[in-house]
Length: 417
Length: 187
Image: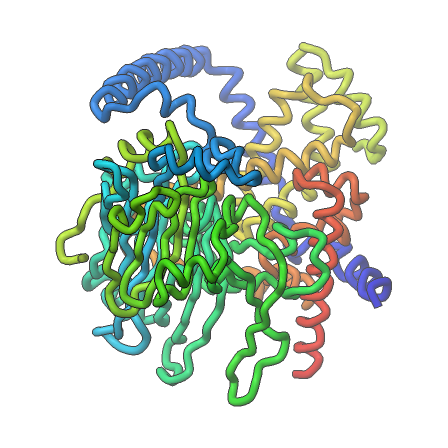
């Protein structure tokens, strides 16, 4: 079958894609002219030299401003020395796979901190579907117990050696897209816009259809996105639902890329992350969703179920550390139930010192190795329909760096929360 | 015009510091690979104007870096690799330019329809239309395989991935094409 298809493809694609040649005399002349102008114009070369000099000055200025900025934002040398953030937990928590001695843990303080990202859905006031709001908290030790040390709107996601901010931007016509940018750009023009409605222009623009996106998971550099589309003029009761996994940078690309439909946007296929997995989706559509105690994979059946409902299959694979750097519970479910009978999900630190026990209405953060853990437990209320989309851990010296960064980038937004 | 890749490789490698000799080498390259470069740039971006700009940049880069060419790759693979890297840079800078725009859905819609119109009007056949409708990673690998007829090793080199990844992408690209062809034949 493949052979026949290959033969057909080679025959059909033997010529170029278009009936007209793109590389013609006109283009050839333009290339030659550009070569000529570069050779014949010493003045231009001088200008180029001046340009390079100016660029050099700008670079020096940028470095100087960078120094000033780092000083202004109290960035410490340790920040620059930091490993890619997603590797920090794994590396600094090297003792993770051999759980540290319990007595030693009991005598130690709290080594771990974590960023927790939450999504809250509510009915769309501008039409069908739902609109989501996001917030991120950094939970770290203060005064001997876990506390919320920073909180703000959007999802603040560690990525490489920096942090990215993901926001949901409403277009004013019932749609909502996820966009991302380095947190440092969040206040700058071209950075992450506020989560507000887009106004009249956007309303007109959205006449081509409505797209709503929800974040299901945010990891080291990957995000899982649910995308619901109402085509222009289509029945509002019959939206198209698609689930994708993307590199967070694709949320920048997709915002402004020329590809409009989800099928043409850039996505990460499962086989790219788990090349040896023979089962699983044929195409690029799959999702990372939360099951009690772990992040799991779902993919759609080839054929749709009855009445157009799609069937989502579980794929029993372990997501690689590139996606989920730490996804192992240090506690048994009986231990979790003993600490909180209402817990329905849980996360534990790579250092084995903190647990986040998730109830329907709260997250309880327990320093479970400490002798007076119950006294030192933090309870963070969850709003109705609020779910966790991200938990990222930092250990030891990285905790202070995260505190400084989170204080910079996590800010409440007026009218947002 | 020189048709033989081997002769071209010789010319490129032998192009000395003499600007006229380098220019002559560039002309030979454009004669032999101008279409290949433009077609690949268009296949990646699906935009005529961007393919023009990328092609110019590719040959200007080639002119500047002729001395860097080593016979570890064929001239064609070398040029296709430059084309791909340049195309990705162009698309990335296009993202940066547009990211500040508020009216992105309108812009997206216009661009898409303009691209589709060119492809609809000028595509050589249905198979090309189908290939160009695939996500980039699939259409690229199919085009390198079926149009340029590169080896697995060469495809991996151009795409900057392992041969295993090329195989995986080809496998999935074929399945997508089969599915598109089945849909087309079902009417």
